[in-house]
Image (cartoon, rainbow, N blue to C red; front, side, top):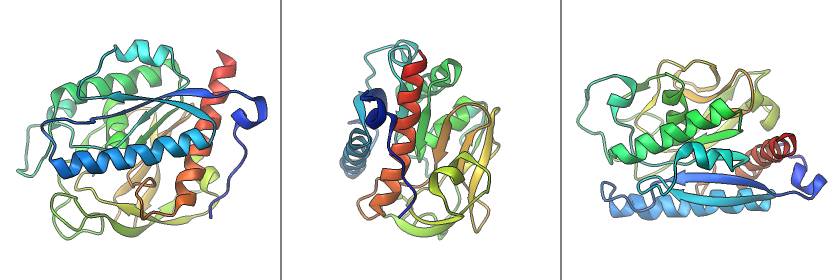
Length: 256
């Protein structure tokens, strides 16, 4: 079990408002992916609410509001998993054939959401695709395909999660949250962070050198490449991460 502390919601009786984004029913995504994303989002939202937050889910594929307006009314931003980002969003042509679920509307909305959160100083947490969105929003780039047979995926379409270890860099925000130097995590991804965006730094890697987590050098921003909300992941990992995120959001609320 990871370290956990009471949320500021528990201490001060407040419930921070979190905007949580993912593509709920995008036509570009397969039926299994849509169903799985619903499961992951439900688990993430439940953990955030258990930690003391009020969660508002937003459909990135069919956004009904301007990202800046949503961030203005929120205490924190959560960007969840999903399909690949179009390489055009980080200034590259499509170099591989196995990109999936590309959705220009979802890309534009979530990149706008991440940029607005960073600009406004709102706590932001990105999970899997959400971490990649955070990095690209800050001017970074992605590895378009890690190739088959890596520790990060089993199936070419990432439909099956795998477990592998990560090492956490001492002195980072993530290290303070987890209270340990190594975790076994659940993941399924064929892309990863390449060049790290401005104002971000690496805070965890896998044994093959792939970046597994990034965080802000100033303010509360964190992206994790794995899925702590996967049903087969250690539930303590998700609870600890959401406790830290919700605490940061409630602290941001009191300062506004």
